[in-house]
Image 1 (tube, one colour):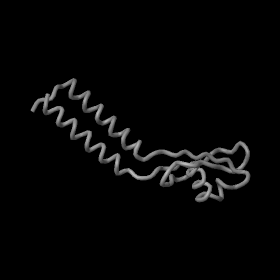
Image 2 (image 1 turned 90 degrees about the vertical axis):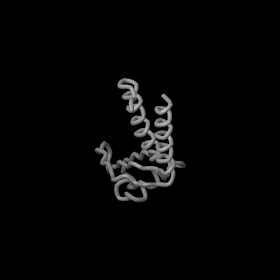
Image 3 (image 1 turned 45 degrees about the vertical axis):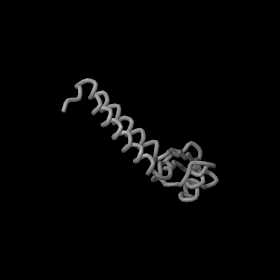
Image 4 (image 1 turned 135 degrees about the horizontal axis):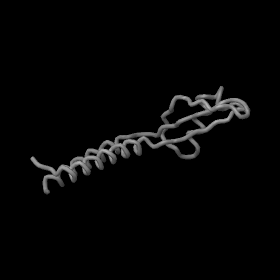
Length: 107
């Protein structure tokens, strides 16, 4: 049981290290021109922070022809890069814990 605790502690420390190295946010933009138009997703953008409508501003700046037109409709979503990494790490840890509890850990 002690070995299991050590292994889990190492896995947690590695996960925390990966999360702490994740920098910036990812901005997802979709826009189109005209009433009732179908939104077209643009390539994602990296921004330092999601605060103060930074994602919406960045979309309109980078994709000004489509997203900053007076007749355009746009949608901007901001995601924390760290939360994606943490989510993957959490799922991996949950899988490992489930596997260990079902099979038992023997060395």
